[in-house]
Image (cartoon, rainbow over all chains, first blue to last red):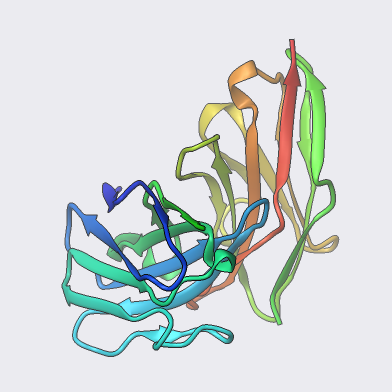
Amino acid sequence: SAVISQKPSRDICQRGTSLTIQCQVDSQVTMMFWYRQQPGQSLTLIATANQGSEATYESGFVIDKFPISRPNLTFSTLTVSNMSPEDSSIYLCSVEEGSSSIYNEQFFGPGTRLTVL
Amino acid sequence: AQSVTQLDSHVSVSEGTPVLLRCNYSSSYSPSLFWYVQHPNKGLQLLLKYTSAATLVKGINGFEAEFKKSETSFHLTKPSAHMSDAAEYFCVVSDLGSYKLIFGSGTRLLVRP
């Protein structure tokens, strides 16, 4: 399975600022995903990022708040803009590998723990 | 619409005793079903997956799950709990051919010595 890394692993930020989270995969993948896990909660899909096209956002998430880049098949970034304490969460990226895509199996990065003061 | 219900938010067992984590799902089409585990301060790890082959699925670390269509259930079991099994477990459903994963609310497994 793909090896996924995320930077930073954690950060503490001031409200009103922005943070960009990086996700790097050790192999080329078509589909990358960004999830949010609020404290004590389950995972919620933010958006799907395919290389060469605009990200597709789920209901409740907008591009102005969570801009995403996908410049190539191994890398993506998620920016959390104009942060407030409600944005404090773990943000995870995941990938769907080609051999498993028919079954929707996804592999997850270690996550970025964000605290907004 | 797809949905997942994990019936227990917390399960506590003694080391060496069986584990049962319950999951019911709702899906309009042929579902793919997964169990993921999240250890403290770690990422998510895939335990096992059901993809319309055998209804009894074996995963890593001695875990297995049985797909029961008539009961719309996909319960996770392990014959003998180990201290290292203490973690958060998520049941996940997806329609075959859809990229969207729908996560359950999670079950925290506590293992007592």
